[in-house]
Picture: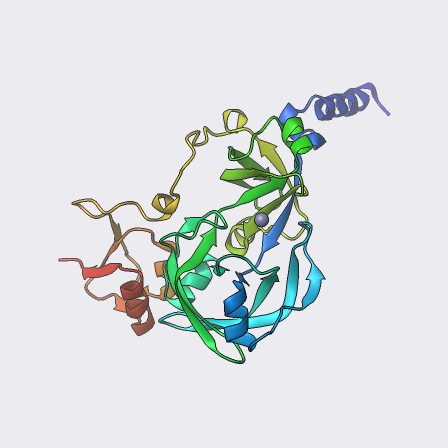
Length: 292
Ligand SMILES: [Zn+2]
């Protein structure tokens, strides 16, 4: 081995050892991906599955006491429905349905981004079980990403309950999650929860390890102000001059719509807008106008 090569190897090893502190393993947070699911209040279990019915456990979840039930329901929105949505137990005070934005587009609904349990003024949805159906006026949300941890983990990371942090995940498509809420409870096990859209965006699979970064240490300057009603992130308040998106392709499909956040989509005269795209735009409150 020549001197140059030895120096190169030594340099690399030193480089590894000297990595910045956010890369150290004690910053590691396992990431779990939550698929769409339903939490039910006791009365709704009976409406959907019959009087006196109780949920049965299929498998334990990572957070102590929580389980995936054998039971599933269909959820229905104005545009379509999704079958076999898993119920998570035990029963809760108020029925809550958690879906991804992709699911919401399919269902034709506009749920807000919320922390689990905060359903006041959220979106309506219909649940259909083998024995009956329930329509809830609120309870449909897109879950805000969060990290469960015990008090000792909180001390170790130097974070507090309710604080927002950034989590970076490396991989073939590296991604960084901002505004991740810390949830501290003695019964919690260290785990970050994201939904399927967030996971897919970063090619994240169950058990991927993320790195907790305090916003001040993040590579980019993260939003340091906690957002109380995160609805504003996905849907900016309407202003006098609505934001418009200049669409230049020949065909506007629902997939294109999904990628456009603006409320107004301006298309060329010859652009073909599929019937489904027109419907979806209406459901989402977007207007499609033809460029003059
Ligand atoms: Zn969770």
